Amino acid sequence: SPVNSPRRTELSDIFIGVKTTKRYHAERLDLLLDTWVDMSLEQTYLFTDQEDYEYNKKLHGHLINTNCSSLHTRQALCCKMSAMYDMFLESHKRWFCHVDDDNYLNVAQLVKLLQQYRHTDDVYLGKPSLSHPIEAVDRTNNMRRVSFWFATGGAGFCLSRAMALHMSPYASGGSFSSMCNRIRLPDDVTVGFIVEVLLKKKLTKVSEFNSHLEALWQIKKLDLPKQVTLSYSKGTKKYKNVITLDNRVFSDEQDPTRLKSLHCMMFPQVGECALMARP
Ligand code: UDP
Ligand code: MN
Image (cartoon, rainbow, N blue to C red; front, top):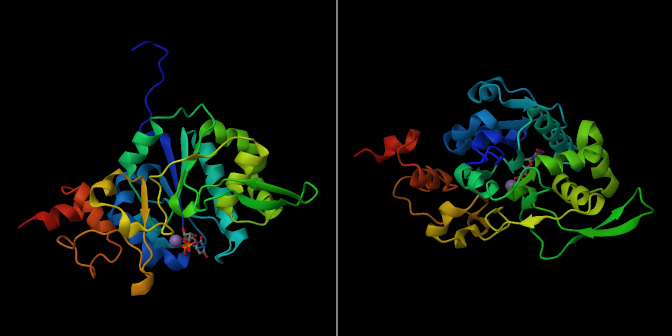
C-alpha cells in the first residue's frame, strides 16, 4: 500500500472508559471481568468514586478513584466524565468510547465500526434515546433555548480524537463540569450540547448501540453478535429487560443478565466458556 495510506484502526487505538460507583462494584464488575473487559483490559479504565483494593487488583490497576461524589447526581456523573475525557486526551489514542457498567461491549464490532470512520475527522457516534432533539436552556447565553441530539450514555458513545480536541476548551481540565451546570443536564446530554450547539458538529446515529431503554428481548439471536453494545435491567419480572438467549450454557440463575451466555456464544473457546463447553 502507498506510504501515506493511514494505518487501519485496531483495538489498541481505542480508549474505553467505564463509569461505575463503589456500591455497584460487587454487583456489576464481575460480569465485566468474566466477559468483554477480560479481552480489552489494556485499553479499558473504570472510573469510580472510592478506593476498592480488591477490584482494583482484579482490574490490574485500571480502577480509577476519581474522588468524585458517590451520589447519583449530575455533578457526580459529570465529574467522572470529565476525568475520563482528560485521561483520554493524555492517552493519545485515536478514539474515546464511553460505556456504563451495565453495558456489554462487543469489542470486535466496535473496532469494525470505528474502521469505517477517520479519527482525524470530527466524529461522534452513538444512539439517541429520544425520537426528537432535546431542548435545554443555555444559562450562560441569555437563557437561550437550544435543541440538539445526544447519544444516550447508557448505550455507549464514541468520539474521535479530532472531535475531542475541538471540545477541549469546553471539556478539559474541569471545564466539562461547568458545561453540565450551564445546561443543568447530565454528562451524556452535555457531550451532545458541546458537539452540536457549541461546535456545530453532528451526532452520527448508530443503531447497534443499545441501552436498557431499548426492547432488548426483541433483538433476534442472529442479530445479537452484530450489536456494538447491549445492556440489561433486572428489576422484577414485569420490568425485566434482557436479551433473549436460550439457557443451554448458563441457566437464568447463573446468568440473569444473559450476557455471559452471549459472550460464550461468540467466544466458546475462551475462559469460563471453554470450561462450560466440555462434556
Ligand atoms: N452511576 C454512578 N454513580 C451513581 C449511580 C450510578 O456513577 O451514584 C453510574 C453507574 O455505575 C452506571 C451509570 O451511572 O455506569 C448509570 O447508572 P444506572 O445503570 O444505575 O442507572 P440508569 O441511568 O441506567 O437507570
Ligand atoms: Mn443502567
